Length: 345
Image 1 (cartoon, rainbow, N blue to C red):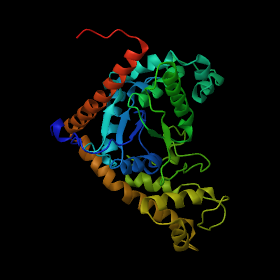
Image 2: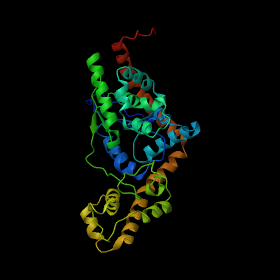
Image 3: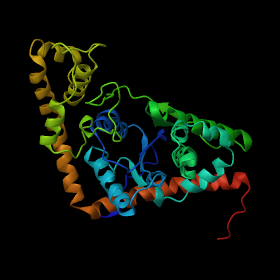
Image 4: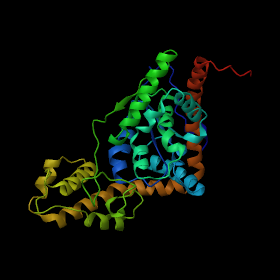
């Protein structure tokens, strides 16, 4: 498919839409928590916002990763994006390292950012506290994240609890640049979705589901085959007693109810009523059936996309072109304001 067939048609009469940017590192498989809590919301945004969905491979090298694995994971993540419903005719799917501007803007912003502010970032502090070897990228990557956001002058960024600190840094650097030079950047706001599920680990419902969980049985990956999805679901931690209800003293059962509600669209009270008196075995089996059914079309679409890598590359090319056009506009403005001599063309 030619790149032109993927690009959204320009509408010069429509008012400018607000810009949403969100990015994911290609460092692990997407899981059910990503899908229900984030990607489905991104899918809903496409009709109302100018959306940039980035694969941030430059962030991925802050920790050791095999080059071949990184290249493969980048393409796979684009395929999961599309299989989950992101539409390249409505939004821009791009690869960070393909765009001139991310690293360049990060340098400019970094020159405005005190080192002490970076040393207070949670991930850096955690690694130092554990006496782990820390590369400069771990210290500096929040500035690169700020550049990712500000390069596209994003109005809002969908963020989870673990990313709020980084968005605050982006807001701070935008305000600092605007004061020091002149108004240039939007100060991005957190995007809080009206709908969305916070999915917990199946093995420890006190923690969110995570691709970095040391216990893989607690995470339902989008590429888990149906038999493995069922096995993980049937071994999920529940609670004492047998009531299927959402209650503070029953976090395991409540998590499964939230999963079932998210994949079926049914309200929690309706589900509680349906499974009253039926026991955990019947309930877990029903949740497993619903999850397998919800992911079946996503997995099928992913397999089709991975069998047509030329199409994936055309999607990336089109998204890169749109992202680069915006990035050049921002970077040109920034370079002029900080005093860089314009290149003779």
